[in-house]
Every structure is written in structure tokens, then in C-alpha cells.
Length: 402
Image 1 (cartoon, one colour):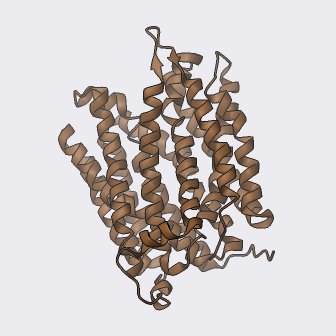
Image 2 (image 1 turned 180 degrees about the horizontal axis):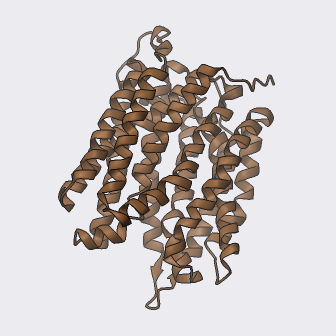
Image 3 (image 1 turned 90 degrees about the vertical axis):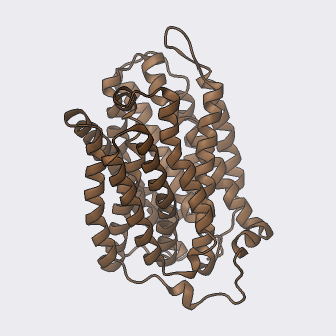
């Protein structure tokens, strides 16, 4: 296959702007979870109420992403992204100034309403800009936004919350987002080629009709759902298991994000380049099968030194990124550009709902003993391993078309 690794300066600027969007977007979501103890104490809420505040974003984002699928392909993707990002920043600033629990939940709903549209538009823009043989490299650059959020964003946000108040991380994200908005507005060209090349006889619900009538698109959505469920079934209980089962200090939890983020800053771009050079599916299979080991270790941890915990968690971060980068490139390629925005919105919606369902399911499986030990987390691990193996089978049946 023809391999085209080079990028123009305009393409690099576009990726920088989109990575900055992803960074602030991911930070807004990630910072809520480690703020849990402080929010529950200061707002006088219980664990269930805090869980609602966290899930309010995901549920609303899933609904709005699904609704957006029916109209986004009719507009310039840049304009849709700017519109969604402005609304997202309004929600983030609302979180910063929320005086009580009820208004905080309302602010999270507002942020999710617009935030749900952002991820799909970012992926659609990248897929429209980079042909299939360079797409994984571009996705690898985008994935470094998650790494940067882990390395710099979460520790900085926790420091701001500890030194000032829980409002400050959201305020900082909001002001950073204003700078990002300027970069997007002036750094991205119009993204409307899909409109000029619009397919004839487009109907309002065509995106759903196409998905149900196209087995390849159904397999791509199934792959996305299975992967996200396998991943997010594990995520919510990593920190509790480290504290309860391993004896890991709560004060050192940030090191998991720091080490994992640093490693993936270097590994993500390399994975993208390998996927473009060797093929998306072979690279995905390698990392998917390799991930079985750290998934089993993460969910069966026993008391061990700090360096061993960080080694296992760092490996987990690397393989998860290694799975997601070629998968995103493959999934974005099962539709033509004229349909891509709608399909990626449906895909984003299904991912949001899959993560919520997986977290709820693992919450039913896992229990906590009186001494703080986490029980049955290994069952969640076996569930995740099963889904990973299913994803390998599904990915082999997904075929790129554009």
C-alpha cells in the first residue's frame, strides 16, 4: 500500500487546534472524578448524588450526539465545532460559578449538551482531511491530548482545587478554552467539501437507515461499543482497588495518570505511524492481544511495591492507546465524507452510552468488604478480556470505504 507520512504546515496547525480542543474537553470530564471527596464534603452530598453529577454529563452528551447526527452533515464542520465549543465553554464557566449542588448538576448538563457534539466533529474533520493511509498518524497526534490531560491537566487541577477551591479547575479550563476557541476560529479552514459533494436525495433520518441497511457500519458501531464497554468496565475501580487491595496511598493516585500520560505522549504518535505503515487491523490485533496481560494484572492486583504498580498501570495506558488509535481510524473510514459527521455522531453517542452502562454493570459486580477490600473486581477483568477477544473478531470484519 502507498504510505504518505508527510504533513503540511496547515495540517499540523489543524491537528494542533483539534488536539487543544480535545485537551480542554477531556480535562472538563476527567477533573470531576478526583474532585469527588472535596465536592461531597463541601456541597454536603452523598456518593449517589455525586455519581449523578458525573453521569449527568455523559448521559446528556450521548443524547445530544445522537440528535446531532440528523443535521450536522448539512453544515460546515468548522462552524458546528465552533458552535458546540462555545456552548461547552458556557457550561464549563457555569460549573466554575455554581454555588450549590443543584446548579452544578445543571451546569454539567449544559456542558454535556454541547460537549457531546465535539468529539464526533473532531474525528470527522480529521477523517475528511487525512486520507485513509495517513489517518492513524493523525489520530495518534490527537490521542496525545488525553496524555497531556493526564500528565499536566489532572495534577494541576487538583492543585488548584486544594490551594483555592473546587471552582478553580473549571475556571482555568474555561479561560484556556477561550484561547483554544481563537485558535480554532482562525487556524481551521472552512470544512465544507462534504456539502459541495453532497449525495442526492438525502433524507432527515438517512443516517439511521444507512446504518441499519449497511452491515459494515453496524459492525463498526458494534466494535466501538464493545471496546468502550471493555475499557470502562475497569476504569472506575482502578483507584479503589489500588487503595483497598494493594495498600496504595490515596495521595499517590495522581502518579498513575502522570506516568501513564508521559508514556503515551511518546507511544501514541508511534502507534499511529505503525498503523499507517503496517495496516490498522494488524496493529490493533497486536495491542488488543497484548492488552490481555495488563487487564488481568490490573484487576487481580496484590500488595506490591510502588514501582511495580506504576509499571503495570503504565503498560495499561500504552496498550489502551494502542488499541484505540487504529480503531478510530478504521471506524471513521466505513462511510463516505458526505455521511461521516452523522455517522460519527451516532458512534459518539453509542460510546457515551456504552461507557455509562459498563460502569453501572461493574458497579453491580464489584462489592466492598468491611475492611475496605474490593471483591469480585477480577470478574470484571474476565468480562473485559472476553470483550477484547470479541473486538478482535469484529475488527477483522470491518472494511474501509472512504
